[in-house]
Image (tube, rainbow, N blue to C red; front, side, top):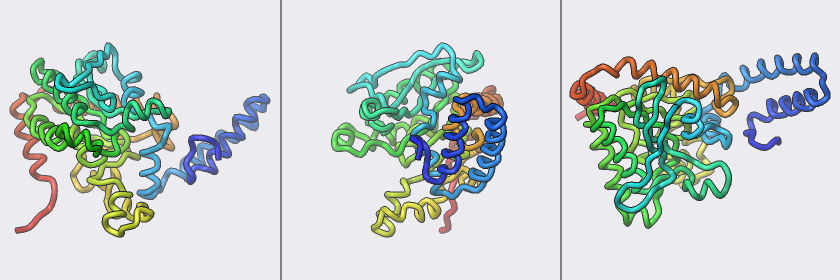
Amino acid sequence: MPEGWLEFEQPLADLMERIDELVAIGAKDEVKRLQEQARKLKSRLYANLTPWQKVQLARHPRRPYTLDYLDRMVTDFTELHGDRTFADDPAIVAGLGRIDGIGFAIIGHQKGRDTKEKLRRNFGMPHPEGYRKALRVMELAGRYNLPILSLVDTPAAYPGVGAEERGQAEAIARNLREMAVLPVPILVVVCGEGGSGGALAVAIGDRVLMLESALYSVIPPEGCAAILWRDSSKAEDAAKALKMTAGELLKFGIIDEVVPEPLGGAHLDWDEAARLVKKAVLANYRRIGDKPGQELVKERIAKLGSIGVYSN
């Protein structure tokens, strides 16, 4: 199979490879015919994806990450580093920038592309200092009345011994508490994987958006399968049971809006994916940008309190 394609995408991968071969020899008419065939195949292939196929798309190695979105959406971005306590965590990107001239404090998880960067970014799994850096920038936004944009894409918070020794649970809990009461607009976009507390620690917002092939769940499917069935190979069954896709979470009221992706997924057209995210961010900012801070906090806490169903 051509590099960078998923198993269920193989028919499209083969067709695109054939198109590239024809482009190289200048067969314009045949290229045009096959491009139309590819468009129809995309429509069929991605129309009714299973939850497990969406898991694969959310983890796609060519899917855009936070810095890819910032390159296309944000001007004058200045990255800030360090938590002023222990270190800088490259798994979290945080800084200040402008979207259509509007100043934002921006935070997001950052995965790596090649082996070296994956190790440096710790596969997008933050340590406590990453969450403390994010909170430092968010508190800066609260001080200067800047809206906050959070881009979520992580398998989970890092569960290593060092992270636990430096207070991983406390760092996540503090972020949850402080984000709930920050008196500025907070927009959250789940772009890829929204995994457990690692995602939630930067995902308390007034408007929570989710790309249509993204995931948001209390646990990855493999971990869920290992706990429920003591067999991680049942991850596909777990993905279905967890109700972790955008459409399902919108129905349950966990998120506020599903952001469409380019046909086939964000990995096939980074520019269009960023345009759609930017459009959704600005539209949702216009809904809440002029609200007084205390009104935002009151509504945010009420919204969080309304999630879930329980009985006495």
